[in-house]
Image (cartoon, rainbow, N blue to C red; front, side):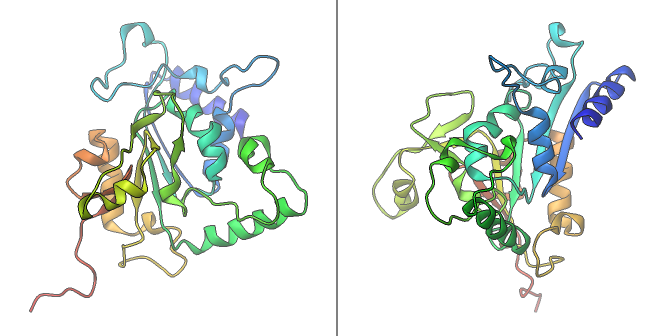
Length: 263
């Protein structure tokens, strides 16, 4: 997959295509992280796929610089119900894609049943002594004792933050504490440095979603229109009118539930 992904990018580049939007689902996120994973042969260097792209466009200026016209420009990366470990995403996965894209969106569901079974099965294999491939592994996982669920980012959507990290290139903002009812959530999140990505909580969607809750994007019109807006307008979640901010870097869709009907 790594080789073919690189061939595809080079083919697009040879045809004069410059702007790239990446949308991937579930296990496809593991492939994406693998192709962007840094090479660790001696001294860490960016992967061949990463080198196809120029630096991530800034939020203020989405146009490529003249110096980088020979490179591809990654306008957005959208991860749908991603089956990728939280620990690896925090430790190295997010950094590898943030260097090429500034508009990164994670769409998840806290009740995703497919990801729940994935977390159980991967937890069992880890407990039995099997190590995951390097793109999915992390130092934090190696230090865990006993049986632990894997925690995929598509289900554990409120965990996309780091603590004590000073790398401003991956952090959107650091949560400060407060007082009073309005800042109760902020107080519980005090000290967390939220990753510079938009997280969409689709747990509240109740139309065109089956019980597995793992592929709403294929039918649900609310989600489909939002993905379209990401690609067409390049707006962050804070600038899209269909979303409400919950806490940290997490948003949810502003819509009437299915049981609300006109009288």
